[in-house]
Every structure is written in C-alpha cells, then in structure tokens.
Length: 401
Image (cartoon, rainbow, N blue to C red; front, top):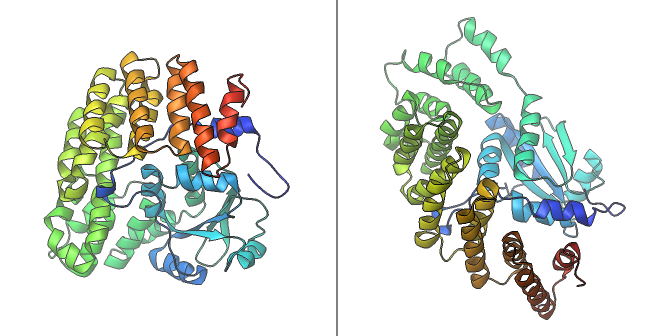
C-alpha cells in the first residue's frame, strides 16, 4: 500500500512484478477484456447498483502511486478478474486528488493507496482493503465483499413459502449468482412451469440463470437468441455466453474432463469474434491445470504462431503461463524464451524488456539477461523514463546498475 508516509520494499515490489498472469490476454480483435469501469458520477453508480442489485467497487488511487499503476497495468486487464468483477459489481476508478475524489476520500477515510472500497447502494461501506495484490488474491477480495452482502437466504424463504412470480424468482437467482451459489434448480423449476418463455420477464430470467454452458438453461439462452438480443441487447447476451463457457471450462479442469472442454469450445460459436482465441486459451488452461506439458506446448506454439504473433502483450502473457504451469519442462522454458523475444522485438517498452530478461535468466542465460537489461536502461534513459525496476533486476543479480 502506498501513501505519502509509507513505501513498499523493493523485494516486495519485485515479487509482485514477477507473479505470472493468471489468464492469457486476448488479441485486440476479440473485444474488451479486464474490468470495465463505469464513467458516470458516484451518485449515478449507486443508482445503477441499486437497480442491478450489486455493490459499487471503487479503486481509490492517485496518479503518483506506483502500486496503483501496477494494479492498472497488470491486474485490472486480467480476463479472469474482469469476468468476476464485471459480473459482480458496478466498477469505478476514482483519482482521490481530482473531481469527486477528495470528497470521497474524506467520506470514507481513504488515507493510503490503492484503497479498494466495496459500497452498498445505500452508500455504506460493506468491505474495504488496501494494497496491491495479484489477480487471484484480488478476486478473493471481491468474494469476501460479496459474502458480507449475501441476501439469498431471505429470498429462499420467500421462494419456499410459495412466492414464484417472475420478479421474486429473478431476484432469488441474482442473489444466488452474486455469491457463487448454484441457481440452476430454481431456474429449471420456474422455467418448466412456463408456457411462454419469450415474455420480457422470462427472457431476463433465462439470461440471468445462464451460468454454465453444459446446461439446459444455456440451450434455452441460445435457442432464444434473437428474442433476447432484441429485448435485452447483444452485449449482455454475448457476455453471458462467454461467462458460461468459461465456467464449463473451469469444471472441465476440475474434473479432468476433456469432453467438457470441447463442449465449452463448441458453444463459444455463439460469440464468433471470440471463438478462435477461446479455442486456444481454453486448451492451454485445461492442459496446464491437468498437467499435460506435451499437449500444452503443442497448443501454445500454434497459438503463438497463428493468432498472437504480432501482439506483444499476449506473447508476454503466454510466456508467463508457460513458466507458471511447467517451469521445469524444457519445451515450455524454450517457448517462454521464444515468445518473450518475439514480444520484445515488437516493443522495447520496459515490461517486455524485464520479462525477456527474466526468461533468459530462468534458462541459465544470465550474461545475455544482464546485457539486455543494460540495453533497456539505456533505452529508458533516452526516453526520459525512470529505470528503478531495471536497476533492481541488476542489483538482484549481484550486478551494479
């Protein structure tokens, strides 16, 4: 956590920077990824949160805060982070020194940065925390906030007491989904009782209840695609398809079930612009999580050569994924170095220099790594950029900057 009175140690900083990405960046053509931040006022965000029965998440930051910038660069764009936060919260980034920021800082006692606030639609803080953290821990932070706002038991009582109207069912399903509890039983019970699934209320229930691609509700979703898109919009339809396919992918990994993987990949056809990239990224996640290095490397090479060869961010993330899953496998290590070299050839920005240097050092090429970092320092100075992170690498390797 950064404030005017606190500082983070270089060792902690380096540990944070060296953490592997938890999801592969998609090519630009696949559309937005990561957290989508709301650009209205705080009051408007509270109104939207009340309407959508969500919490407001605020990233309270300043422009001079290093950990804030690293969260923005490394964590907020993460696909898994975006998937979770976009579904669960109305997200805002607010500079605590501009616009509404100073008033919000005073109201909620924000004194260090970054501070993460989870606020109910009534304006009261439900949960808060400070300090940069990697993607997995940041998602867990959001889950902790949702647990404090769990209203599913209240809706369960009403539902079991016989309140089965569309509004109650929708609210119950939303409450279950927000805290990660299964909602398919409730959805199926309600939908099988309906003669007309194309009413606006029932289409909304189908959309909200779609949590997995391997389910009857998903089939109802895509079977009523035209009506849902006309009534609710294509953006929300496609978001639900992607979310459901990723949920089935996670289930495939958990149960080591390749047929579930193929089902998730096939059903992504309903979002054509993302299907090709998802085919590769889901395979990589599955083979990585199920410890199949040969299949992983084969998919990774094809992905690097055919899909992301001109995307430095995606190449960097792929290299990190190779090391995350198979840091001791020769094929994965060579591929991590190759993709890092490709990324650096496309962009000499510091993150790619640091990543390439780390991959060289990991492959016992310390001399080449040092030479590369020195080259990166010279490039940064020529651009008028600070070189602290590059300097740290050299010091960590026992070399004078």
